[in-house]
Image: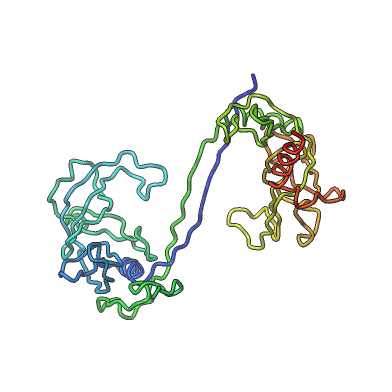
Length: 148
Length: 198
């Protein structure tokens, strides 16, 4: 019988997407080191911001600063991260309710072990020193006070 | 009144209000979102037979047990009837262009393709569907449906178990197949002829 054949097959799409003013503003904020949410007609704030109100579909335009601190609502532990993960060390993934926001965002939790995480704990953003307008400009979240 | 589809929705064209810190900075307008999927490709028996035959400069198809249609590359099944196709058919390396596309823009990651290039459905003599190949050895403006072509193979000492053995397809100079009998029309023409005889 002939030897079994195998080959590497890589599918790669180098997409560049236009952002529109809302997502563009969110990414601009990240580049400048601030996190933006967007205010709904009822005064609550969505973070990350969306272009439309999820209930009434009216366009949303009022971007406001939130964070950089917040509360950890829920988390899980990732060990080991996959090859294409933005993080190369074991880390948490959490739902973070930023100060001033009414919806939580998902991001990495940069601590040594899951013992460092608990629901309700205070966390704050850790920024990359060089930023380009991308979600990865935000390196992740660390326990409040950890970077001081 | 229907909305003009060329005008973006209000939130995508309208002004947004920003915190003061962002009032005078250059806004981000685009973001890179590359997608990459890495596969470990292991062919099944039909594809393995096809690929192994390439090392001997042979092109294999498979014949449908239902109506005799010949598929290339073989997939082990006639997808129209769900019938297994265990019988291989050796096909010649000649055929015609069933349809083609001239590409004038470079593709990221394919620096080996010099633009403009022609990709085409090659319908081999004896096959009833086309498979993809490059057409070269002719000015792109001269390529046409029904044009007769033959495979240009890599040198024998470079042959592998891969369809990449065929570098491209070049014109044979024979008279064209009429468009009404070229490409997917060929199968329909053949069925119609068989119907008249029956």
